[in-house]
Length: 464
Image 1: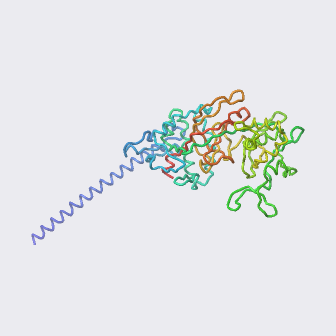
Image 2: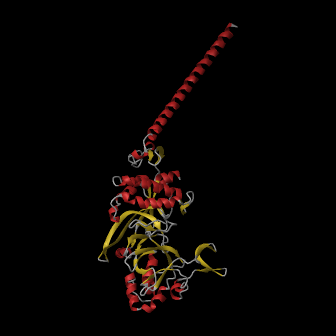
Image 3: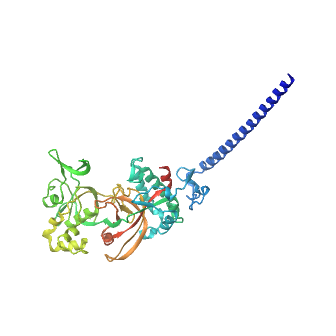
């Protein structure tokens, strides 16, 4: 009995010892969790007590500035200036980024080299903050798009509108710092180069002589949008059309409007021009400024189009042997028709496309429904470069002197995809140069291959 009692006491002692050790381990764990929570609470409190208007921290103060060489270096704290909170993230590596045949991501060194070449002065801008207004307009457009739907959808690569929005927000937040720290664009964005260099042309807002009422010398109508012009799905394709006794028909082409005058008498004229060629080329640009007889001006903006394919008038004349190659500009076309006025409407009608306008006091707008910014706004193919997106580009454009192009100069800057065009399909860009006939020599003589990068926020790519 005594032996059994001793054994029971020994067993009880071991149980007590194990229980005591377990309690010690548990207490240590609880203390550790409490310390972590206290530290987290301290960070949160210190962050939240800073008022919005007093935050002046550099945007890369908690970010990764150089390419990480270890797992520890790859972890960075990203400070959100909009939400005043600290979040832990991993900087993505190029090999993990989405890509397709149309785009390829630059590595960190290549991105830094590209960002260092940007010269805003080549665009006529004095500071990065001058881009705030145009970027805000792109952001307003992107915010109105369905955020979970694709803004870009290509085999192997897609971007949602939410990612375009986040990229614009981050770009907007960085603007105050980029004059001193342009490398932030490489640190915070993935630079997607276009595998095929796009062809860049230029456009502008022309000024033409016109009257709001018909009077001697002002005989050529500028039409508003007809009420019977419709747009929708026809046989599986979106197109402009009209209905005739229940039948779906293509809308009237240029020959119908200018030669057969099918729209005359319907009170669609919003103004009358002196020169029909001015109206033709204003349709090519998609907008214009009317210089009225009393010296005042009114703007006409794009209203709609008839949906027919576009053909360059210079190329039409060249195809018929009427103008030699290399002399197909607007000035050469005008000189030809000054000698052959009877052929003008017949030859213009071979470009079946027709644009209708609306009379406005607001400045020229892009497809995003916002004013265009000279030397910043670009017309793109929205299937390739999403509307609203931030682009970096390099291109050689003409100098102009005394109304004539003289030599070339390089523009290395930031563009915004804010417009589209009938002829802008695939790897194509149309660069908006500005308003008035003084910029025409530059706009009409841009014909060059451009280097273009689509800039997407790394955070947007990580978080989807």
